[in-house]
Structure formats: structure tokens, C-alpha cells
Amino acid sequence: MKHLTSAIALAAMLLATGAAPAPTAADADAFVAKAEKDLEELGIFAARAAWVNATYITDDTDILAARTGAAFTEAGVRYASEAAKYAALPGLSYDTKRKLDMLRQGLVAPAPNTPGAADTLSTLLTGLQSAYGKGKGTYKGEVKSGNDLEELMGTERDPELLKEMWVSWHKIGVPMRNDYTQFVSISNAGSKELGYVDTGAQWRAGYDMDPDAFAKLTDDTWNQVKPLYDQLHCYTRAKLNEKYGDAVQPKTGPIRADLLGNMWAQEWGNIYDIVAPKGAGDVGYDLTELLAAKGYTPEQIVKTGEGFFSSVGFAPLPQTFWQRSMITAPRDREVVCHASAWDIDNKDDIRIKMCTKVNGDDFVTVHHELGHNYYQRAYNQQPFLYMNSANDGFHEAVGDFIALSVTPDYLVKIGLLDPKAVPSADKDIGLLLKQAMDKVAFLPFGLLIDKWRWGVFSGQITPNTYNKAWNDLRLQYQGIVPPVPRSEADFDPGAKYHIPGNTPYTRYFLARLLQFQFHQAACKQAGWKGPLHRCSIYGDKKVGEKLNAMLEMGASKPWPDALQAFTGSRQMDGKAMIAYFQPLMTWLQKQNKGKTCGW
Image 1 (cartoon, rainbow, N blue to C red):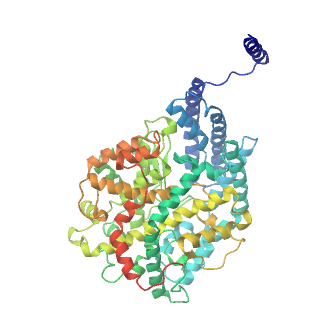
Image 2 (tube, rainbow, N blue to C red; image 1 turned 120 degrees about the horizontal axis):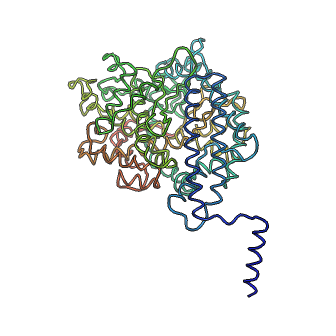
Image 3 (cartoon, rainbow, N blue to C red; image 1 turned 45 degrees about the vertical axis):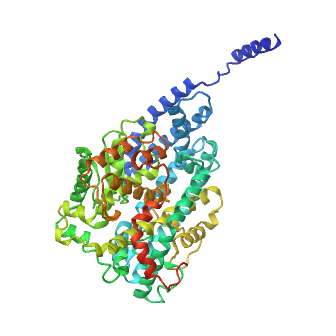
């Protein structure tokens, strides 16, 4: 009786004070529905503002993008904070629980729930991205855009000119350091309000597993493929030493970063002419030359990419894609040239933004970016919070997996390569080495970008060691060093788009592994019997049907479910990549015999 009296008294007190009743599972359902509706509406408007800003950089579009970005961030923070109240309720449905977790994890840069914080954060990030977009360097003393310098880095072979471009471009990071430091502080405060120790932990929590377990997964998969990278590094260093001599590139130790054909030494394919071995090195054709000989335009390259997806059963791109995409660099304004794929309205307004040039690299990049667009359209029937890939690595991997089918056989079928010019089997080492210079060389870079950021967000890397930590990781994982001494007066991370652009990078590392798992599974489904690197799924509608079934899932299920739907396996690993490059691995080990590998 005493307990009953107490309960009545408590109820009366709650009524008298107007205290809110405890939330229920039904309240959580209603909250999620409202959050999805509001965020979708805000997101569409923010996407339009961001598009205008990225394709027409002015002070005005900076402000518009910052304001709309701030409104979306504020809503995201508000809904993320509220989601935390419902996350532990009993009786939640699978979808509501999953969406609550997505709301808590979804902000790449969460602002704390304090007045002005979202505005400050959005202004900082818009300013950082615009500083990158407006960045300039020099070549032979002449001012050049980042896009032009990137292309020149792939063709110039004079080490002094390479050094000039590298050093001048990396100066763009210097003014970013203070803003970046302030951004880290605000973002961490926002992550802590959502229940995470820092923003890095929040990013890692978005992979359907414990953040620390995910970090371990990335280390484990890297260790699977590291022996292949080590052999490629050893071989490439020897070839650079042969070309430039000991004074420029010593026989042992790390490789000088600007000699590798790329501003960030992230992919080395542009120096294939330096590493190509006599006899085995000739792949039999040059894709850039083939495109030029056929008079390809940037628009025609994109049409060809669309044709690949059509061949495996996907519907053609909507007319608005061709009307609204930015396919080439405008001459009359500043734009962000970094290639990207956009989904403006979560339905059919899909676009790409590229400063496309007629070369082999951009031919492959178009296939990659369209992979994003076709994925976006495949899941457009999902609820808003599920309109995403199974994990962010899947989004990157789909286009890359399609691009693995850009084989000589494919080039013959689309009329770019003469059937008589198809390389014979004795050219396979050349074909694989050319691919490895991009695919394999990228792996450690794909891993270290976020390792640096995770350290920055956790406080393990402090603002007064930002640059040292960056170059230490570059040495540890890539085995490279800058062409000139660096100090904390520099901010080299700012010279890589994804740092000022605040785009998580582990997705690209995962994509490098997943694309080979997808490719291996697709070739098996297609009944392919030859070596993996010769397989193209062009024209195979059965493979396309199974691929679309995975893409349509969006983010509605944990990523192992999506992986299993297409490949039959729930485990992400590097075995398929090793299988693809096994003939090259054997060959590299023979070439490196007697050499001192490592750094």
C-alpha cells in the first residue's frame, strides 16, 4: 500500500510540475520520420548552393554556401542530439534504431549546440575549401592553377621544375593552419556532445562496428597487401635512381616525393615510362593517344562511360545530367576542379563536376564518377537516411570496379583499339605494372590521410606538430620524403583537397580493396576463365542485374550484408587484390633480387 501511495504521489507531482513523460518507441518513430523529412528538404537546398559555389567561386557564393551549410549543420546537430535521447530505448524497430545511429554519426563536422558555433564552423570550412580552389603555384616562374600543375607533374621530368611545382603548390596550405586548428576544436566539441570521444572516433563509428575494431580492420588489410607495395616501392626506386642518379634519388632509403608523377605521390602511373622494363614494359597501346587519334572530346568520354553502364543493363542518364553537369573547366570563372559526382534532389538530378581533359586518366575517372551517379540513382527509392552506400568505401569502389573492366577487350568493343593491336599474353606484366603504379601505390596514402586526422582529432597530434606528424606518416607508410626540408611554418596537409575539404579518406583505401573483391566476384559470375586482369564485364547484363540488387540496398543493411549480396562473402580483405596482381608480385621479386628493399 505504501508503494502504491508513493506512486500516486509521484504521478501527481509530475502532473503538477508539467514534467514530460518518458519517450516511447512510437515517439522515436515519429522523431525519425520528421528528421528525415526536414533533412531531405534542407539537404536539397544546401546541395544547390554548394553546387553553385563549387562551379562559380565568388565572395557571394561563398557566403550563400556557408549559410545553407550552416543551416543543414545546425539541423543535423539538433537531430543528432535528440537522437541520442532515443537511442537506448527498449522496443525500437530495426529501422528506427539504425536511423537513430545514422543521425548521431552522420555529421562529418558536427558543431556543438551553442549559439554561433554552426555558423563559425561552416564559415571556416567554406573558407578552407575556397582557399584550395583558388590556390595557385608556379611552373618555370609562370603562375598556374592546381589542375594545370597536377597535369604537368605527370609529364615533366626535370627534377628542378618538379621541385618548383611541388614547393610552390604546397605554399597554399600555410594560411590554412589557424583556421584548420579552430575547425578541429569546434568539431571535437560537437562530437563530444553526441557521445563520442572526438570527431575521428565518430567517423570510425559509421562502419557498423566498434571504432577501435574498425581501425584494426584497416591495419589488418594493409598488412595483407603491404608486401606487394614494398616490392613495387623497391623496384620503382631503383628505376628512378637509374634515371636521375644518386644525387637526386639514392639507391636506398625513401623516394623523393615529387619524382613520382603526382603532386601527392599518391599514384605513380604517370611515370610508367620511367619504370617500364624493356620488352615486358610495352603494354601495346597508349589510351591517351587512342583517344586523341579518334578525336574524342570531353563530352564523348562521358558518353562512353554512360555506354558502359548501359551495356550491363542500367538505364541511360537523364537529360538533365547533360544540361547541368560541369564537364569541362569554364574559362570565365574560378571553380573547384576536383572531380566529383552530385545527387542534387535524391531522385534524378544527378551530375558530375570535372575539368575533363582528353587523356587516359580522365577516361578512367569518368567511369569512376559515373559509378557514384548510378549508385545514387539505384537507391533513390530508399528512405532518405538510407540514400547512401553500404559504407562510404562502397561508393568509391563501384566506379573503380567498373573501371577495372577498361581492358583491351573493352577498348576493342567500343572501337578505340584495333583488334590487331590487342596486347598478347607476354605484355601482361606491363599491363599489371601500369595498373599497380596507381592501384597499389595508392594504398598507404589512402590509409595515412585519416590516420593523421584521427591523431589530430584525438589530440595525439598537436597543432605545433601538424606538419612533422604528416611527413612522419608519409615516411612510415609510403616511404617518401619531401624534395626540400619542411617545418612547422608549413602546413603540407592543406595542399591535399580532402583536408581543407574535410572529406574522410579511409573510404578510398577501402575502395581500393573492395573493387577487387567486386571484380573477382563479377568475373566469376560472368564465367570468366582467364587471368583476372584481362576480364571485362562490359555487356554482361546478368552481372549488372546482381550489381544493381546490391546498389538498391543503399545503406539499409550493415555493409557485410551488401558485400555478401554481390560477392557471397561477408569479410572485407586484400586477398582478391593479391590474386589480381600475383603474376606481377612474382616478377617484382625477381627484379628486386639482391637489392636492399625497405626504407
